Length: 444
Ligand code: PHE
Image 1 (cartoon, rainbow, N blue to C red):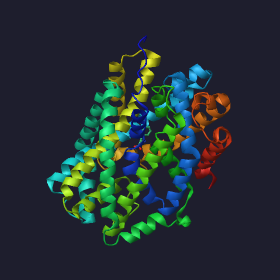
Image 2: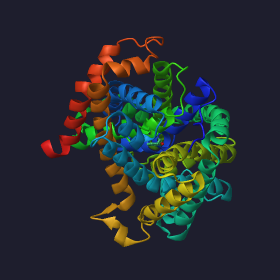
Image 3: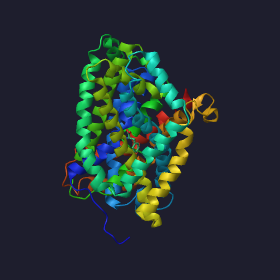
Image 4: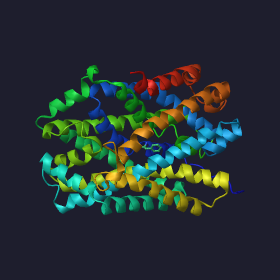
């Protein structure tokens, strides 16, 4: 425990790691299907508004908590306030388990799809056939569980080595490749015959489609995509040194994450309409739509393999940050070794993930009132993350207040325009907004 805490190698390294945490399945798998389920353009506008109103302020708040205390989420609250506040950190650890448990399942699907691309079963643009391949695969009991286990192992193997060397280097190299590939696929998708209907769906706000659940979905998606509300950014902030400008780093991470989600929408939604899929297909949307895009382009198999491999890497840089929250907590607060902490957290999380892996048709028990366990976990997350964010906003806004501004700006050395606006967003706007959104299902 006397060992000095590790720190990110550079500001660029931190941004890549934090963007690595933010950019993942949330952007490429979840964002397009949630947009599809919630009427397209109107959802996009609400989502972007939430990212700017709550997202940026809260990303900064979490980073301030971590960097100031150099502690895990529970330790950070203990050091600054004590009382009941460390429970907010505990809520984050719990949320981390919930997310990771289904995250490894979906990431496992991407691993499987790397192989499916080469086996020929996806070389068709027929929606029904692609839907069958996906449905049959996730409806099985063994493969999805095994793939989830393999992905959990990959995550644990990375976390055990400490995150600096491995993950920072891989992320720096592969995330830009993923970005370029995304641009190529967007170019293909928007030029497909019939893509126009998808673009119209995505870009024309239809506020009639907005219901109570749209607001919850949008706020949940904003928090999920930014890795916000459960302490991942407190944890990553705790490995930050004072020498970097925190507001500028926060803004870069938010911009990268949001940009990539919007691009993913341009890749999936036009293709959905061009090939006649249903935009409200749910969690399978990317897995049924993308193969059709690949089948319709030269070198499709090559691009397909590359794409699912890069998506798996993007998911890995996110799942690592989820596991790291739990591991840092066990090391800081319970004196676990990194090895024991990683092994036990990974094992428990995998066990919690099994019902999700088996909920897509394999075991009826895991379909509750018609909703698969995995989808329930996703919905639970959409609630838990904003709840965590609510307490973090109140804490940094009211308990820290001006001290948070000093901490964010290195005592005035780094630029933070509208510093007092930031504090008032944390004090009033974000808490009221979050409460209002979370109450929507009850109010309407
Ligand atoms: N932001 C990640 C994604 O979009 C998921 C995540 C959520 C990671 C919360 C860490 C914490 O895929």
